[in-house]
Length: 314
Image (cartoon, rainbow, N blue to C red; front, top):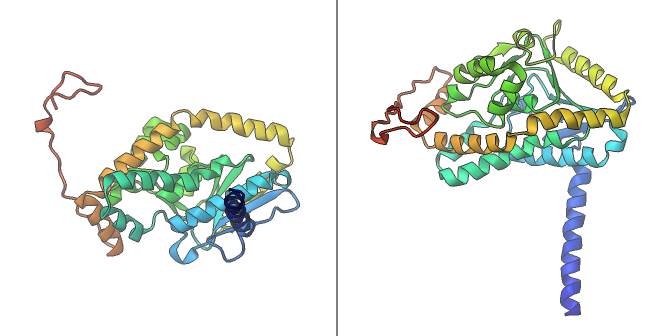
């Protein structure tokens, strides 16, 4: 028994050591997600680092992102605020097309769980105890914009393109978009953006209240990053305990109902993955053409609808 117990302790210790090594190397230069700083003002920068794919969000990037967030949280005594940005000319162009194709070949039950875990990796940004400012230095599309919406404040380049473009892909919105966007821009504007997939500029996003400020005068987005870093430094200069308590209070307002919304989105996306429209949407993007969606559904067989309009026929 003693030998067996020692073996268990040794295995557990090895796992802890492996986890510790992963945490200590999280965010290293050249990683899918880089951790820069904190600087002298106490601002750390988390950078999505896959510029060749316009920082498309993938499972490996999500795993690294979660580790970086955990590292910053553990070392938060030296961090007063965080800036989240993308490397290169984009913040994030959204999901990876190959990943979407694989979902079409998987089962709805598995896809719902896969997507819920996918959201969780990137939404771990909300677990940081300090304010997070998204510096939208370039396109933020689909899940990429959802990640920015999960941050506390957003600053964008005036020319940056932003959109929750899921329906144009044949996909239900995900990663909290149906929950966070209405709370930021209002129900009607959110409905327009979610149901049309319209893409707006940084200037338009500022007018809608989606971002706090649109920064003009640069094409590479670095002026927006500088403005976001300046804003984060102002937050970091204030009383740390008060700032962190305020962050918790503000986030509590958006936490109510979020878990339910995430599972609803995951289930709805799992249904979308099984449709011909999803295949057409992905193909259209790859072939750089307009999609031709043909799936039209009728519900006559369902008879009486027992939802909010109970008693009425469809």
